[in-house]
Length: 512
Ligand code: BLA
Image: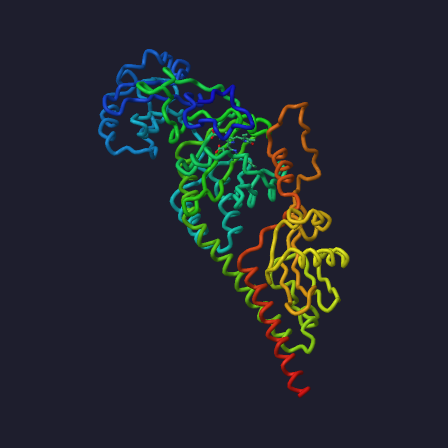
């Protein structure tokens, strides 16, 4: 296993974050043998939190710490416990006159885990059944994905009081984008920011599919080690996948430090067994959110996960409908106009309105007509020459022309991506739809701010730095084309050939 000192930016997807052998010291941990219920490991901070050295606890039963009733309760619960954590009591009866603790229990890796968290008087912010009922009603009622996300971040912020709550959505390439945000007015917006896949390494994503919520109340902590560090009978620490107090990756802590975040909480958003996104919460000062409120946030995360598919389908259907309706109207113009080219652009809806694109071009009989944001005519002629040379298909599309043809770099601001349909008969007859480089469409409120420079040779981890890294990855690419868009282009092509064939036949008939 890699030791902390051996982890760097090139191998951080191999850091075994599930077995750190340490906890965050805002609470303490006891691991019990699930059969004998004897304490086999304890975090070293029992000394500071209880005044009892961990060594004195290991090998003993729980009686030293808990009342007989509490011990009986745990014994009774043992067989029903799973990896899913549950809150036991709200008091550690042993400590009289001292702060009380909550006990969070789960069973995993042949161990019974007792995690002790201080009781906080965090205000419930009026979170009660009517509140929940209302929140769920609104989550159900939201139709569009973005509206649904915005509502969710607002609720989580209301419940937890974090300075910033955002939803981070993953794309197919596993990069992420902030698509909704609720924040303190003093903070810079992050809406629209993108990050590369490497900000959240693979093993972390895999863990977040199992464990729905992570919490770091004070990111500047010094980890409290387990004593002994390895699980008895194993040569590794116990598996903390489901542990609440798990000490997190030092690389991630550095990231949080650099972004000025002193406390965070993240909730997994899962669709069809895949990590769809995360709710990420940040606070500028340490912040202890009670287990109960975190549980409620987890509940909201699960509700979100259950509903997101329906919302996405709704958006998709609406877009499909728009494509179909505009396509029908466009093709009516094409059919009813003597000149099919005029039918494509002289009245609304034009070629450009059928689906999302930046611009379009009609190249027919040596003429080039451009709409919206398009390359120059000269550049289009070069593109047509490239198409004739390299492409056989009647319908062709790319979201990175520059990757296929180095000359494409020149047109990337407006045409990093395009769909081309050939109008059979003569070479050079094409209809083109263009899409701009993704970077040109990113609206980033923080853009004017100076990005922190790398101190010589030292990599500086932060979201702004990540945003820069992401930019380099997506240079010269446009948003990808959807299957329904390519299909619409194909149908337009077929329709135009039908119309032209009909005209041709009529002309032939008249000539005879
Ligand atoms: C974990 N990185 C994470 C997590 C997030 C991010 C949300 C999950 C942390 C958690 O659930 O508590 C990234 N957080 C972001 C981003 C935003 C945000 C992008 O708020 C944007 C606003 N991180 C890096 C690099 C490495 C790295 C380069 O940036 C490694 C080379 C590692 N990130 C890393 C690791 C974890 C992580 C190891 C797991 C932390 C853990 O759970 O132990």
